[in-house]
Image (cartoon, rainbow, N blue to C red; front, side, top):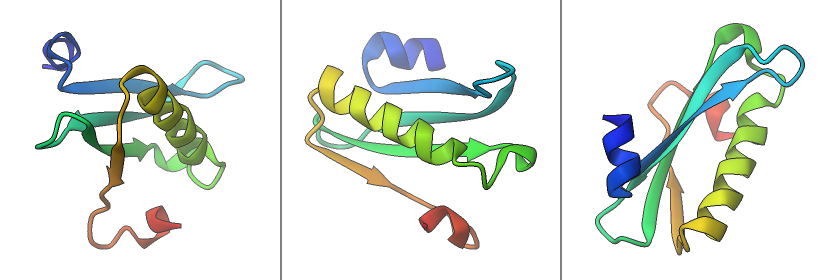
Amino acid sequence: MTLQAWHDGTGYEFAIADASTDRYVGSIGSTWGPNPRRFAIGYMVAPEARRRGVAVSALRLVTRWGFERLAIERLALWTLPGTSPLRR
């Protein structure tokens, strides 16, 4: 599904890797919304990698990539109930 979404231009998923070990620590992705210039973004980070700025770094990189490469006009971040640390 991820490859098809990339091909269709409806979604883009990325692995998040630890910069020093190249070990997988999470994922981040954006999905096309009802307007072709509006995307939603979501991510998850492994418990052992949390509180180290991993999500913030990944979010900055993917956001910049989306605005530059996809000409996104609006990007929304959705969080699930009970995930208040994500909102910081």
